Length: 263
Image 1: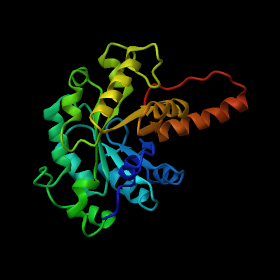
Image 2: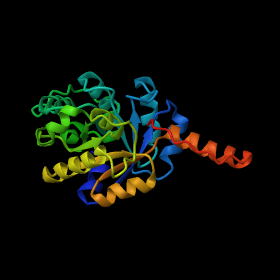
Image 3: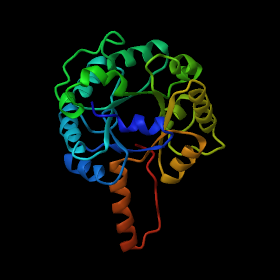
Image 4: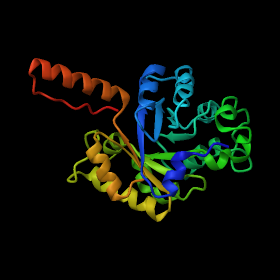
């Protein structure tokens, strides 16, 4: 079976630089896939992508050596299994708040006896290889998102759940959960920043990987230096809008810049 490059990199202590796809287009996915990202995550939660978009996007990404991942819109077994069957090599699952939810997430990603994933990896066999069923439980990356108030009280029970490879921090929802304004690249003076570091320490203690969504490369590098294994910077939509705006501002002489707080 094709190895999961993201898992191999993190095992070797190398940080993973992850791109984010919100635009339902094979063209933008192809452009992103050729820019040198280690992995690309198709955002099926807050992006504009559904399954019929995601499948050809996965096929497009697969023309490169970039590892295809997906963030599903909820901890829903049917959606998780279907996107894995389509050849996705890892799942970022939102709003995992306790051990029971972490177990449900993991088990949807794994074949028996470790889970209840139904067998039928139609495209997974093409992308992963003929021995997919034998190794898929080990190769699929499973990241539980820590972003709710309840999850902050139950970090160890979530992170110690068998099969959870790591956690992923959504700083916007995390900020909302603790009564702060949503956004990325949280300043050190905020409670969200303190919580981010506390989550990271618990991940290290439980010997699992830690990922986080960032707004800028500078902040992502800061998070790598703190010990995060997996960093996302912006998204295709933000890259398109910020690149176009920079050109227009330069041509029109505008100096006003406004960063989006969205993915």
